[in-house]
Amino acid sequence: MNIKEYISSGVVESYVLGLLSAQEKFEFEKYCESYPELKEARTAFELALEKQAMENSIAPPAELKQKIASKIFEEDKTAWVVPIQTATQKKFNWTRLVAAASLALLVGSIWWIMSLKNENEKLKTDLIKTQQDLDSSQEQVAQMTLDAKKMGEGMKMVSLNGTANSPKSFATVYWDTASHDVYLLVNNLPKPASDEQYQLWALLKTNGQMQTIDLGMLELSQKPLQLYKMTNAQSAQAFAITLEKKDGNPDPNLGKIYVMSNL
Amino acid sequence: MESKIKYSEQELVVLLNGQSNDAFNYLYDNYSGAIYTIINQIVLDKDTANDVMQEVFVNIWRKIKTYDASKGRLFTWMLNIARNAAIDKVRSRGFRDNQKTQAIPEGESGVVISSNPTVSDVGLQKVLTTLNEEYRKLIDLSYFQGFTHEEIAKMLGIPLGTVKTRIRTAISQLRTMIQ
Image (cartoon, rainbow over all chains, first blue to last red; front, side):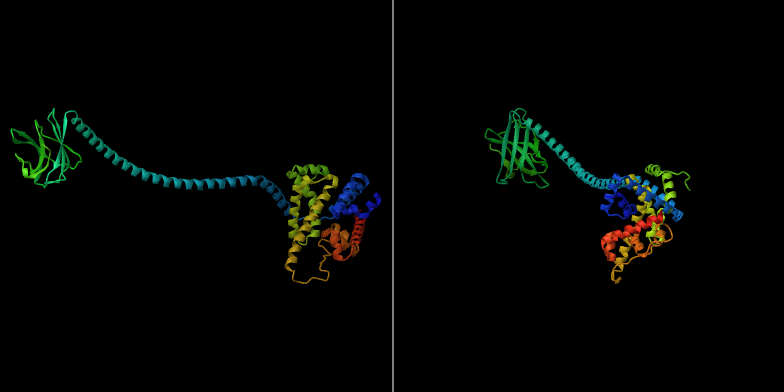
């Protein structure tokens, strides 16, 4: 190609002024590498344009410089500061989120603790009650163990069945034949009137004569399966309980036998 | 404060890459006038020109690392940044204005040609006034309004080849006037 024609075609000026298409621009830059005179022509026009532009310029408003300077340098600073601010912002939000979550947790925890506390209180009360029940049960068991001990070897168990006066009544007498101790277990007896009281008798037949021996008055308690310690019996062939006046009688009211064992 | 020291372009590029206050002061003190002038030849009002001026210097400042000395002088590079920014601004405005006035019928060609940009007594515009009307219009459309040769060909109803030739001729004339 004829480089002189190319240079004088106006392509140099068009390039410098930015009027070439992308393709033309690319070509021009490529030719500049191969043709030093093209590059020289380009530089010459650039310098001429620059000189012309410099000599015929109008000054911008004075305040513009400071405005631009602060924009450049403050934005430069902001460019540095922004990520930090963002980080701080994020951190702040994060803190707030954590705080909110913590508050939620705290409220939840308090509710939970209160519930637990209430439940705990109830459990405590229950426990105390259970403990008391257990204590009393243990007491009973201890007593019953003690009672049972008394019913060891040589203890004679006698069932007293209900008579016509009270067919459903039933009691049991434990008689220690060695120590002669008598214990009465009331399984079922009707509650006596306030001026009446049950009385236990030992029955002994000697020489065809029926002898009744007072074994004591029965102080009925509310406790179930209460074993009552009665008066010792040296000898007995049977036992009976009669309903007597309060504090009893020296001889049994035979018409009011409630329970009696076989002879 | 005017800078007394004179840097070569190579030195200035190094200085600008350092992004110091001194670099900015030197750049602004030496080139703001020429850049402000080219902006005002494209942008019609002062406020907009001032906005573009800020954009241009911020861009020069930020894009200095992309400047390639093998493709032209620093001043040329800066001048083109200024020209492109100003044209972009005018076009974004023109676009908005066109949107607003869409219902109003335009002239026969459908194109409004601004044949006399504002600052006509300085810089390239001053040189332009010495060209004949046709060349002046072509330079105005291509250089000051940023239309491509294809767009100009369509606007004026002239073949693309003719547009290219005429613009090159106009520019060659400009050159003889500049030198």
